[in-house]
Amino acid sequence: MATRSQTAAVLLAGALALAACGSGGTTPTSGASGAAGGKTLVIDTSFDLKTADPGRTYEPTGLIVGKAVYETLLTFDGADVTKPVPALAESYELSKDGKTLTLKLKQGATFADGSAVTADDVVFSLTRVRDMKGTPSFLLDGVEVAKEDDSTITLTSKSPNPALPYILPNPALGIINSKVAKEHGATTDPQDKAEQYLNNSSASSARTRSSPSTSAAR
Image 1: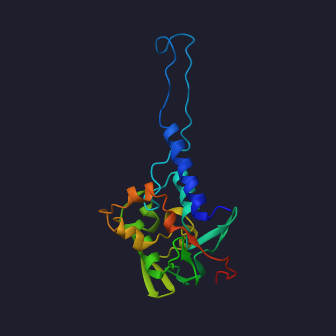
Image 2: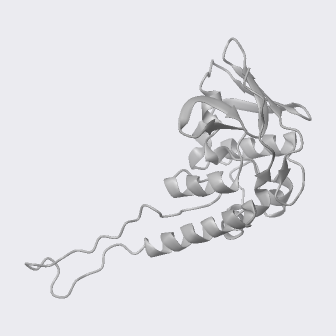
Image 3: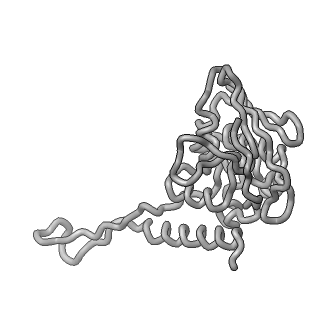
């Protein structure tokens, strides 16, 4: 049976192929352009893939790839978007004033290369999205990400932000293996140079594996 990383690689390869096929535009027919009776061939570009870097993608195909390759702190249970449920975070709690979201990381979660998913990986991943100023950076505008201890992360907004738990399932906020990413030029500023690596590698080294959680949000 194929592993998740193998499946992710196949998905990315397929998306890249579809993007290549859909990048052509229209094909001219015989005869002069606009001639009576002429026909136009329309190419569906729904599956264009601009990038597979989660910190830069925000088009549908990129988010589909991101969902397959990376795991987020929170997710939704199928089509039910009324309540975020644990993913890499085993639990979460929003403060009464709506300004601070506290998340407890699931113990034993690992990346596809076997290394542990740490609080440092989470802080790096989310800070990178916010400060690299890619397309999805607006998701965390005004949100400070901090490591409280080895298993606790806080996201703090200056003003009440009750939408935070509903934002975190976005595939653009998938957690990457910060050590691997840094080795290939990832930073937490606009000088980041990891996009080419994340495009060409399918980022399978950053896919997380963890057992289903039974913890509920508080």
